[in-house]
Length: 560
Image (tube, rainbow, N blue to C red; front, side):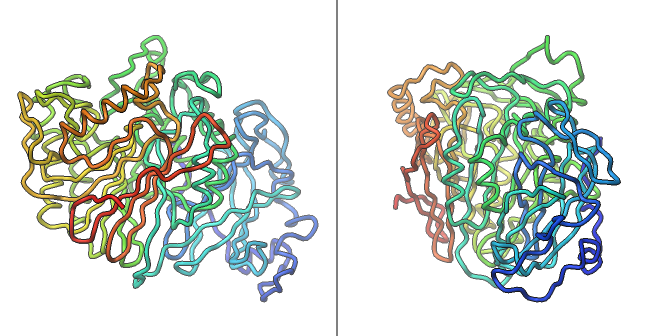
């Protein structure tokens, strides 16, 4: 399997400037001509007339930099560049989905929006074997600062992006994080991203399901690339999604941290296979492991993430944001056991709590426990793909889904019991469910008073943290009729009341609205705001439909 390297080859800063035309590093006036902005816009050898139809991204910020990303080619996989003469940097127009030629671009990073007085000017490599993408790890920047960047060829340049480096280690400043999940392209528009772009944030986290292998027909038509069977078909999902100007705008405005869930490959897959839907006529052609590798490869190519040299498919990581936050981003998909009881829904399933079952795998679980108990950050925040708190749907203790932590009960109890005993100020922000929730976490996942019935849902004895579940950007929720597509707001509201009655740890339920979330934490409290948009209206405004708070030292949720 071929992946982009952790960092492309870098040239020394002064040497890089020399080959780019001898531009000066001396301070420039605000209206000075930016480096490489002189004809022929960067000098000989750069890719000529490149298109940047997929925009730009800055990923996984650090105190001293981030991974900067772009792709050379048209949006949507149409008109992508073909192999040209690398020596002269030529660029032609190729067929839909073709890879970009290898070659070089110039990259400028500056504290100024007009890109004058750059702090970095480099040549970066376009990877022909990685769908024409660039991944460049910028280092040496100052903590807690805003930077602007742009990729340039000979006769073409990308949009200007911006990002903020992480706050310095001694910072006590508040931290603001944006969150989104589940954005089936055909099912709605991305007004949520336009509003996310306008938020004042340290960074944005995608909680999984950035692309979908298949969605139901919607306002943007029908998925014509359903269950892609080739690496290029999987790449084309990312090209298609980034035809959306609001999504590209959000990426150009904020640093970005993605985690994956299941739809980047197949719904509810595990390390052993997938359980639903079984599309044998399509999926029998190529084996599970090969298609999974292609799905992961396309994700790494099209996401602005650095690589772990000794573990090329690892995605779990942590980020420290001053003294205020340590963010943990586990991988709840790659290492998990098959879902209990054949991935049934709304069932009583004794297998779900079997002691041997794991979602994280032994190595990652220990990493998470060590990180949580060893962190001295004020708030420990987990970017969590699948709901941690229990969700009982009937008086007999039946649980909603086996694909959530309800299907891995023993491991959940181990994590939450450790948190209850040894971790202060734990906040989970979660994706996947499509509905919006907020709840208090107890050491078994269930609050005292939760119906046990035949399931044996042991009510907890100690509080462990809080959880906020972000609604989908567009993907069908309960109010949309779920997979059936028949909207029934009244039934969804009734189900909200039923869930609240059966799950006393729930403090908020919204099974109708779509949108995104914003978490703000400071020394005294964590505040979470649910932002709502109309997914069927590309020009939708935004409304804060619920604002909640958790005081420091208390694993409770209160309404603001």
